[in-house]
Image (cartoon, rainbow, N blue to C red; front, side):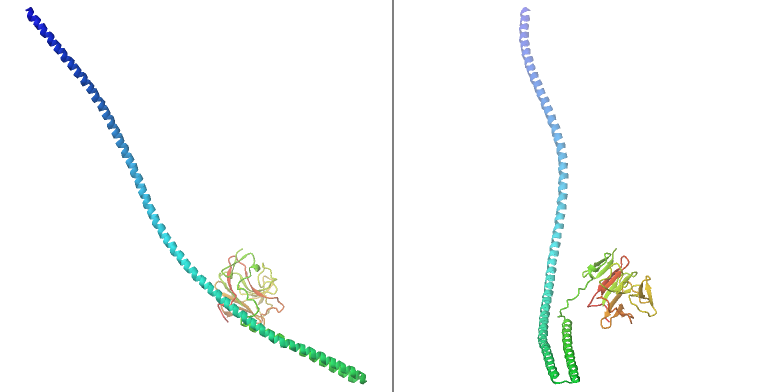
Length: 389
C-alpha cells in the first residue's frame, strides 16, 4: 500500500510536473495570443484610421473634383467667348480694311479731280494773263501815237500863237487902225478857242477809247476789275444774325440778288443798303436804302401813286404789293442805265414804274433784314439764278 502510494505520488508528481509544463506552455501561448490579439487590435485601429482617412480623402477629392469641374466649365465658357470676340474682331478688321481701301480710293479720286481743276484754273489764268498783257501792249501802242498827236497839237498851238502874236506886233507898228487890230485880236482869240476845243475833243476821244478797251477786256473776263465774292459780308452783319452754309449764303435770325425764304410766317426785308446804314435798323427804313417787305410793302421810295403810305409812322412805303413767305424766291436789282429799281417774285417782275434810286446815293449793296427769331433765307448773287428774265 505504501509502495502504491509512493508510486502514485511519484506518478502524480510526474503528471503534476507535466501538467505544470503544459500550463506553462498554455500560459506562453495565451501570452502570445494576447500579444497577437493586441497586435490585431492595433492593426484594426490602424486599419479603421486609414479607412477614415481614406473616406475623408475621397470626400475631399470629390469636393475638389467638383470645384475643378466648375473651374473647367468657367474656363471653357471664357474660351468660347474669346473665340466669338476673336471672330468679331476679325470681321471688324476686314470691314475696316475695306473701308480704308475705299477711303483711299475716294481720296485718290478727289485729289485727281482737284489737281485737274487746279490745272484748268492755272491754264485759264495764264491764258487770261497773256490776253490781258496783249491788250495792255496794244493799248500802249495806241497811246503812243495819241501822245504824239497831243504833243504835235500843243506845238502847233504854240507856233500859231507865236505867229499870230508876231504878226500883231508887226501890225501894231505899221497899222494905226485900231479897228483892224481889234479884229485881228478877235480872230486870234477865236483861233485859240478852236484849238482848245479840238484838244479837248481829242482828249475825250482818248478817254472814250480807253473806256471801250477796258469794257471789252471786262466782257472777255480779262479786265482789271477783281471778281466779287459770292457771299454775305460777315463784318457787316448784326450780332443777332448767323451766317452758315458752304459759301455762307444762308442767313438766320438767332438772337440783281435772289433770296429763298424758308418760313411761311416771317418778317423779312430784302433790298439795297449803304455802308452808313446802322446794323440794328431795317433796310428800307434808313435814308438812301430800299427794300421789298414780306408784308407786301416797297420801302424807301418817295412816290405818290395812290398807294403811298407810311410804315411805323416814320418810313415812306408803297402798300398793296405781293406778299411773300416760305418757299418764295424774291429778286432785287437796279437798271444801271435808268437807275430804276427792280423787284421780282418767283421769276415774275413786279410793277416798279417810277421807282428810282437816288442819284446822289452812295454805292449800294445787297442787304437783308430778319426781324423774327428763326427767320431764315438763302441768297444767290449769281451768275446762275433760279429764274431768268
